[in-house]
Every structure is written in C-alpha cells, then in structure tokens.
Amino acid sequence: RNSNVAGNMKMMIDDEIPRSRQRQARIRAANTMNALQKISSNAAKIEREMGPAEYEEFANLYRLVRVELNGLYELLAEEEREKYYGYFVAVTEYEKKIAEGVYNPDLDGVLKFD
Image 1 (cartoon, rainbow, N blue to C red):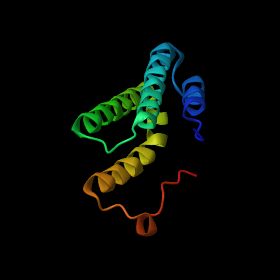
Image 2: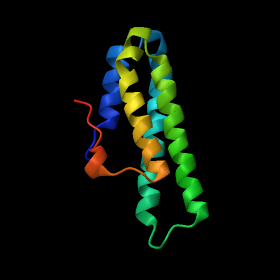
Image 3: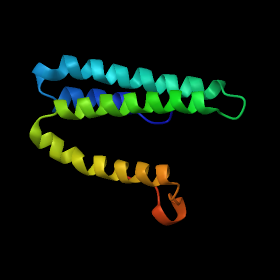
C-alpha cells in the first residue's frame, strides 16, 4: 500500500503513451490494479498454510499482472520503451532468483530504480 503504482501508471499513460493508444493503456492499467488488489485481499484472508490451489491462484494473478504490464509497455512509443527496458531486465533477474530460491537480500540488495 505504500507504493504509488496506480499514480505512476497514470503519469506514464498521460505523458509517454501516444494519445491514440491511451484508452487501451488505461484498460490495461485498471486490469493490473484489479489483479494486484485481488492478490492483496486474498493474501489477507489466508489464516493457515497455503496449499496447491492457493499457490496456483496467486501464480495466475501474478501472471495476469505481468501480461497486463507487458501490454502497457508495448503501447509505449519506441523511444520510451528503451527507457524502461533496464527496469524490465532488473525485475526479471530478481524474479528468477526468487523462483530458484537463491535470492539473498544481504548479497543481492533490493531493487532500486533511482
């Protein structure tokens, strides 16, 4: 809740996505936020160890977020895509380490995009 994902997407849509693609971008942004909210609300309801069904549900929601964000990225003008590509690479590497169980915040640090 302390991030401003919605505000950042709105600013990106308003400032960096061509006007002809902004309606589609707003739909993708809304889908992204809805999925993130569902992840948060579903996680808050869990009061026991998660089972395979919950893992699958969260994985599917997370996949939806990635698909929608990728679609948003594809709506950017080419020169704007180049600006965001480094973020994509950093997040992908971070996710790969998490998935492989080799992420160590003491060694790897945290993602910073300053």
